Amino acid sequence: MFKVIKCNELNEKLINKKVEVNAWVKKIRHHGKFIFLNIRDRYEKVQVLVNEEYLLKIAEKIKLEYCIKIQGLLIKRPPNMINANMKTGHFEILAKNIEIISKCNELPFMIENDNNASENSKLEYRYLDLRRDSLKNKIILRSQATHLIRNFLVKRKFLELETPTFVKSTPEGARDFIIPSRIHKGSFYALPQSPQLYKQLIMIAGFDKYFQMARCYRDEDSRGDRQPEFTQLDLEMSFVKKENIFKLIENMLFLIFKNCINVNLPKKFKKITYKKAMNKYGSDKPDTRFELELQDISRNLKNSEFNIFKDTLKNKGSIKILIV
Image 1 (cartoon, rainbow, N blue to C red):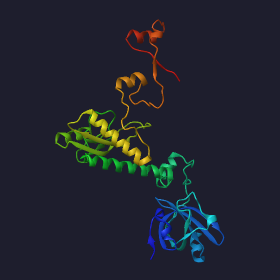
Image 2 (image 1 turned 30 degrees about the vertical axis):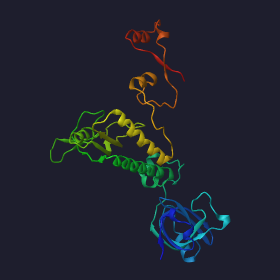
Image 3 (image 1 turned 90 degrees about the horizontal axis):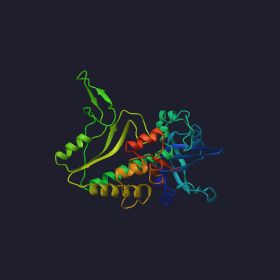
Image 4 (image 1 turned 60 degrees about the vertical axis):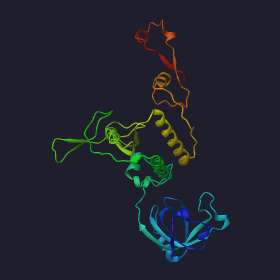
């Protein structure tokens, strides 16, 4: 009987025992009377040794990114064959049975972190692109962060509640995506830009702590920090002061950064007013890692004859520069 396991579950205790792994083929190396298959699943990679004649015939048909089932014995690698770059590099699976679960056509690009495939190609073959370690790790990181947020808030008596996604159009910061109604001809639903009104109704109903991982939609051009469709943590609290909100968010972000990427954030974040941010940085979301503060040179230009400067100062404005 073969023990069905994931690649990261292979360990010394399973040496000389029967194991079964379902994974995708990452590399193939032909060495005449034997073939090495490097296979990977979501968790890890492992090497498979194929040396029996009837299995070699199957292995010769296998191509990159085939999904296969491997049954065999877990054995130790010879000392000179140990791969220190792999967590499973001290052992390999000696194949006793190989089953091709699904085949793969010729790859449109190599499944490597530094491939030079176009963005259009990566999006068209998204299921292949997600197999790259760099992208896979980002997906896993997102899942871990979401899980931590949920646990953190639920422990503090928050309720995770869903709000409607077919709503009436309301004035927001961008254009709505609209959906025609089949029943009410000439009428339209709007996709929510945020759950703003609904979460306030939740507060009125007496649910004093609410959150959701909200899907939001805004019909606007993509930017570095915004897409037409995005997910945000949305929360609302009743009967609290702003200091309570600051403390909650600081503690939550501290937990996320520590547990997800092992970074220690300060227990208390530096706070500046909106007015100070605009005066010093010209932005309400400044990157304070760089000391590029605006310098007020209004005094130096008070006698300037340049009309733009003159009119600005006349209207009680100010003139500021960045020293780069």
